[in-house]
Length: 551
Image 1 (tube, rainbow, N blue to C red):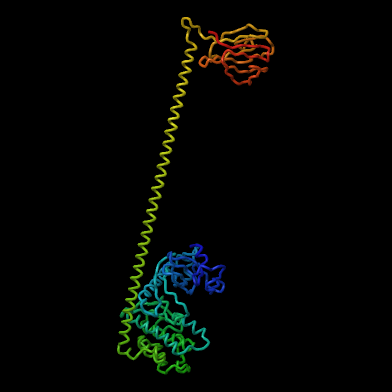
Image 2: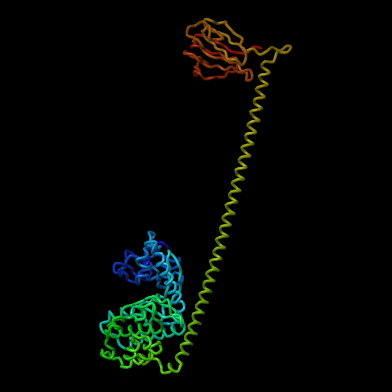
């Protein structure tokens, strides 16, 4: 997903956007319209559903983005509440944060108005010429609503870029569609737009007319007109919008729509309402040689009267006044006055409501299917997790059993080794007892001896006690077995021990000239065991001794 978002085109949302150029639609980031840098980064995902693309528009209180709905797989528009001068983008490039603590009150008030706009659009979604809203949510310390994406241009752009004045029939058809939609809005919901302008009338590439930006809209109730804020769009707003105290109503939108009609036909804005109150006049349409019927020009003049009591009061009256300028196939029929058009409008609303209900039911069913699929996936994940845990527990039990078996085996081996050592100790003890046991009748005791059998001291011998170390050498004070000659003998030449339990002699050479056995010198300092009798040469052949046992 991250790689996909990194390479997604902010215009067509194809995944082949490399180095700022889309190979599918040809969009190039370097030619994108300039923005203030306050917006979300392209590729940001909102509500885990909407991928934010390029900025479509940026105003003082909000930013509108081109976006992609990953659920419906459609391009849409997302409007974000982002009041300039009160908030800024945080370090994470997502959240909005206040510029100062004093901005909290105005910020929250604007947020409420923003959410009111989404609620108003939700109520008006069944009306063809009103932009359709599909979702509204809070995120990133602000709020968003999702609208249908309108691919085209607003009426103001069309007028400004046109090489010549627009045809009267074409402009009249656009204004009539807005007027008929506002007629339904006024009569059925009591909502007034208060911001009708060329920039808020959008014409799509397939010639659909859409009225957008209900951020200033208010709901009127007869006898309770208090609380209207001052909302002014110069050259398009009637006098009552310059004051909180003046009454506003459907006639307020009539004035703004008539001013928009005048601008779209003439390419010229009206003087502002305050300037007109001070005496500034405008040139009526019938004097501009545009081909506008005099009755239509008079209807526009009547809709632009400054005094609300003398002005055209309803959109129905305005529709009747400008209808003659529309193409014949687009012109409202005379049956309008008799109420047939009203019945047709009611039937349209009923059919549209049924269509929306069917669409809602379809979405609910799709949501239910999605929830069921998610539930099954969750159950499958839980089952897989249980199986994994069971397998892990089985492996742990098997490892524990192997460890226990190895411990038992080691314990058995230790017991066997202890038994063997004990048996060996018993054998040694028995041998020692046998070695020191007095001879019985006719049986002599085992008596170890050392005898000199060669050399100057030949014939000298000693009986030695078993299991005791005996030192042999020339020293009169350091040895047990002294041999005075020859001089080659060391003061302590060797150490002898008779081990009765084994029945062997142990001999260790500690001399300078060595101890030899069978002509081979023994390693100095190392113990050697020999079965008696055994003979050794001390200091080469200077002295020959024998060790043995007598019965």
